[in-house]
Image 1 (cartoon, rainbow, N blue to C red):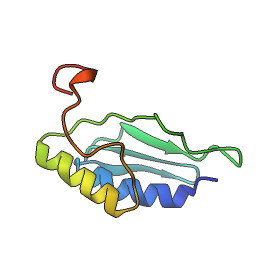
Image 2 (cartoon, one colour; image 1 turned 90 degrees about the horizontal axis):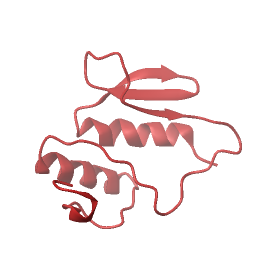
Image 3 (cartoon, rainbow, N blue to C red; image 1 turned 90 degrees about the vertical axis):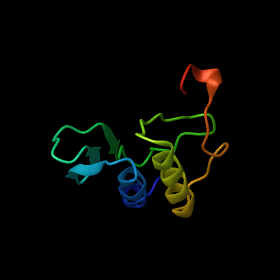
Image 4 (cartoon, one colour; image 1 turned 30 degrees about the vertical axis):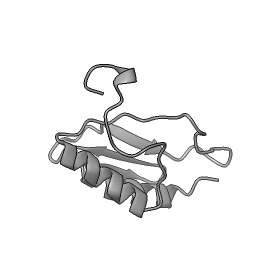
Length: 98
């Protein structure tokens, strides 16, 4: 079972490195966006007892404003218990600038 509160705490920390803040807090959801923007651009939803974390191969893409922001995101994520499938860096196999 996914710990919803644990996931929200993780994303509070890592998304802050990209300039996101929590813009929605609900008993079953949290949403993140830019400060002053009420619309969430990234959201987590607690979907019930049968919810499971995605498995290997699931990727989420986010936009960063600089390489330093990418490195900070990675550092905070790993420090907070996240894992990766390779450190920060370009992934040209996914397209130009990726």
